[in-house]
Length: 160
Image 1 (tube, rainbow, N blue to C red):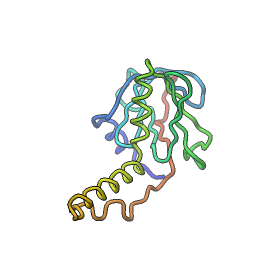
Image 2 (tube, one colour):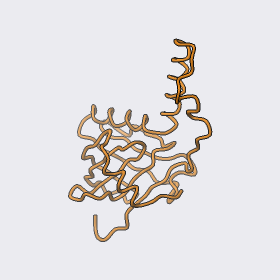
Image 3 (spheres, rainbow, N blue to C red):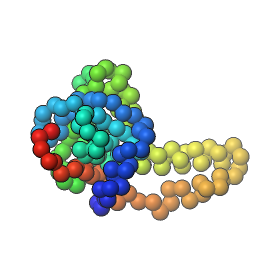
């Protein structure tokens, strides 16, 4: 999947649907504190003392799974994340309530969820009014997501 690093960095500065400092464990299995920010269907993660993201996860077709109380993971179905199909990210929250909020927000963040919701509401409006809403007539038609899921990571300049 193609991406523009500058555009991703600009997107990471947009207002977040959710943001919090969470414990994050990636493929190296070391738990680190990261500022995690959900913007549209990207999950950006930052070192707690830096303004630029360390990386981002595109949440399309990803699975959000409860691991244990107060913890969840994100993984992608086969072929998975572009760089590593076996990759799985674990997150630890400060409370069970925070964990539930994150899991629900991440499940709602995918393009596919938004598309299904739009189609549902378009049909509900049609039932009530008998009309198709202007601007919603073509919603979902011909739109494709280029990749199953991908991970972007800034080149590291040192330990993190």
